[in-house]
Length: 503
Image (cartoon, rainbow, N blue to C red; front, side, top):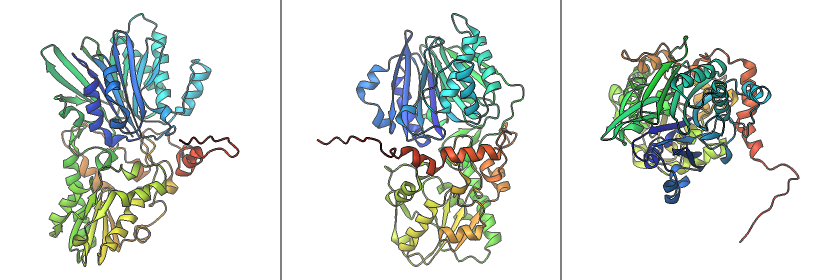
């Protein structure tokens, strides 16, 4: 999961890209980077950490130019080393920078072909670098002195033929312009915005429309599945759908958890979708627990608030804020390692005893993935004096890995894997547990004015829209990206020499 942004402006774009990345910080807290172009030169600053930690005033002053792009990263494929901060860059042809959100399901095969046939060297294990080099290789085949829109469309058409998975990307061709493209299934989001200035139109690409709001850009539309958007340095817009078999199947987890509630994705309000999730969840609770003794509904902040309010209203019980959130602790779901996630829950949330003591409490969360957060929060509620603790999830059980750019690589790490609802309730310590039905979730997110054919619901249903996810692929993914695999990579080699510096 990552956040991407690109701007072709009529004035310097460095500060605006920085501001956009701060708004998209929820999509990646591991690393951040900005690249700009001025008079054929490239200026890059990137590093590990939050946006505010990576960029200092001197860095911003060095990012010159009216064209630029930015990226915030949470590692899914590849590793979480600082060397994999984006954007990535290649010198030939022209000089290309790229930032990517998603995951290529055939990255390993592509890497082998790139090194063997395209004669391209890869410095990292990141599939983003693979995607960049595939794009560069296809532009190299064009071989024209200056890139034209037709060259861009031809090159990305070839990228679509070679690359599989869920991805949205923004790339900058130095001295030429900015392009963005979205996978043929539209799994990962990408939106196009515009702003009129006295010097002409400015264009912006971003993962979510919320990035437009603070910068004064208006949402034009979503980039279509299989579509390429190219804006040259003069601000001229060129677009083309480059896939004949495009099918619109966005990831439904964007609406459940990943996106901000004030975003519009594929013409669907995330906030409104979460309201409808709460409506459907409340109706299921009434069906399954008609004689419930719930005293109060409490959300697990922040993403479940909207659904929880609807649940309380329909059930006719009080809604209360029972947890105080420490804003300076990152999202626990995307933290590396079970131990760190578990430890961070208690530093992130503090219970207000008054709202729990002596009450039967219904806790509402957006989803339950590994169960770490849920178990810890239920324990907090009981420590605060709750008589009974019930739990409701606005999403169905997460039983399968999400392979399209969300860190759910191993089924064995998912609390719902091969467990019944009653077993999950016992494991997380709830008196009872209610999950949203998948059909209700799809109905809640679907909107009459969207062009969606279907949703990617793979983490709930095990049905992968790209059609290339096999048991062998999932087994390999678990070996490469599970918590155990990541811990092994971080551990120093036995017998390795370590130098410890002290002041």
